[in-house]
Image (cartoon, rainbow, N blue to C red; front, side, top):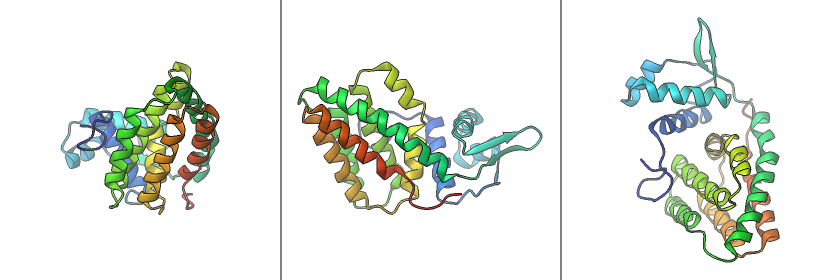
Length: 217
């Protein structure tokens, strides 16, 4: 399955889909802190085997959304907005560099993968499917990081758990999707302009929208 149905965006594994689904459930309060999660029950609910559920649990535990204790099992951990906010300056710095490098390498040429992601976001802007929008947003930012062609930068960016951060930000925000889509278009215009300074600043400014706007802790 792809990140957004009908698009040509990055394909998402079954474990990734389960991770994203559980992230949204936690972020929107349907799975509250302390709620026990069992692999078999989640697998049965979603109609999958336990293997991708186990992988999703590992990813969410690493991201701090779940906690696993011996003889207790896996439970939902209380979200701390400070943990999320702490990633913002790091992500802004990394994506600012990515924007600069991508603009230099593109030299005014179109970035097709990012354009496709914006098209998907525009198609979703009239509704409220924030999980699908978050998938398109992640694909957009990944396209810019990939275009920078810097493996060290890509590894550092991937280590932040961008998919999870984006879903939480989208789930806890009331920012209109139509405006969010336009924001991404503005960033794309800056990157495709071929001006490294403009692209870098556009990415740094844009990342501020990923700070959750309500107290999670």
